Picture 1 (cartoon, rainbow, N blue to C red):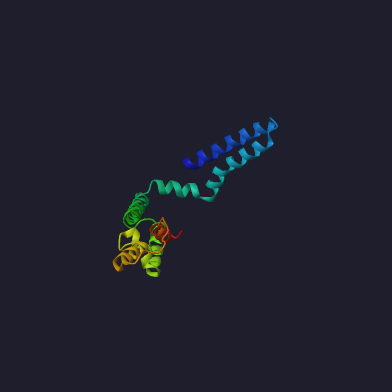
Picture 2 (picture 1 turned 90 degrees about the vertical axis):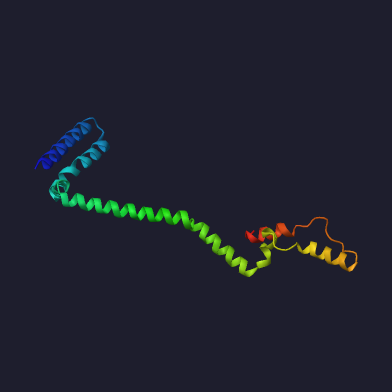
Length: 154
């Protein structure tokens, strides 16, 4: 009963302010004020205000809000734990792509992991062991850099 009276008073005051604004030749602002001031009386007429008043003073409704709060807290906690342990969705996709690339070209990432020697270094060792002079090798060996770039998909 009190809520309906307050909403009606707010609507009447808002319509009065809208009338004064229209008198000052600011019709767009007056129309906007009239629209805002009609909302409270519309809520009273539809019964929303009565429902809110009944909900505000209901112990059962507040217990329901408490249960919803606990559910939300549990949901957010599980999401936070999942994000900390597994990583982001982007990291999971990158890990899956890296595993797929590793299956396709396992030797591509071997130099970056420290497994085995570089192919040019193996050739030099074999050439020295056989006593043959090594072939004209380039002065700079970029095979390990190429392997790292391939590993990262570049």
